Amino acid sequence: MVIPLAQNKFDVDSRAVRGFLGQQQLEDALTGMDIVIIPAGVPRKPGMTRDDLFNINAGIVKTLCEGIAKCCPKAIVNLISNPVNSTVPIAAEVFKKVGTYDPKRLLGVTMLDVVRANTFVAEVLGLDPREVDVPVVGGHAGVTILPLLSQVKPSCSLTPTEIDYLTDRIQNGGTEVVEAKTGAGSATLSMAYAAAKFADACLRGLRGDAGVIECAYVASTVTELPFFASKVRLGRAGIEEIYSLGPLNEYERAGLEKAKKELAGSIQKGVSFVRK
Image (cartoon, rainbow, N blue to C red; front, side, top):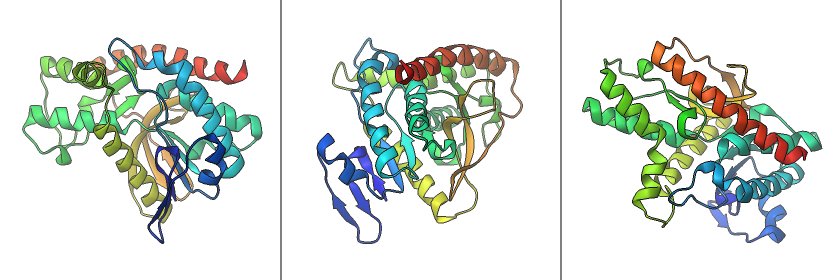
């Protein structure tokens, strides 16, 4: 069962959709759920970073996760609300406080970065985006978004100029949309597509399908940081395997160091919000 927008309940057997409104109906919406998707919060406006959203969205995520801990503690949580680099640690701390934390069931959704990377690389290579696979690791904001262009499938040879262009556009794809909308919001249709694509992967994992591998921001030992985005294999328990980054070239190693420095502060900000 899925809760899109953290408000609706979708019954896979009956195809019935039920709506719930406000915090007073939160427990009714969450009870018995297998997957909860949280995109709730305010969008970015021109000049805002994802981190500017923290003070508003952090409280929303905390409240929703307290409801999850009470009503569906075994649910797989897909967290979309920005800044994801901080809201995933917030969720983890909420669950830890009440003893329901399972790192295998908490996933920050970075699928939109992958969708953008596949699209932009496909444009440069003259391919269909559905034929391209770009691992995107790190986090979900600015320099923490690290596309591993040396590991693109199908294998290709990109020029240094193309690598600079693609890396910058992938990292700043969200800002590009915010500025294009001139105050009318941030990415909506593309985020909805990415959210649905990732939720579908989680459902296929729950069903027991083999080889369901996607990038996500999760509790990790891939680096020294407690949370990091990389490829994960999804299954009946949520995350069944977290993959290493694989071989990185010099450009990617430098990008990784920048990403980790930025991520460390974002993670601590989320942890401190709950512990204060």
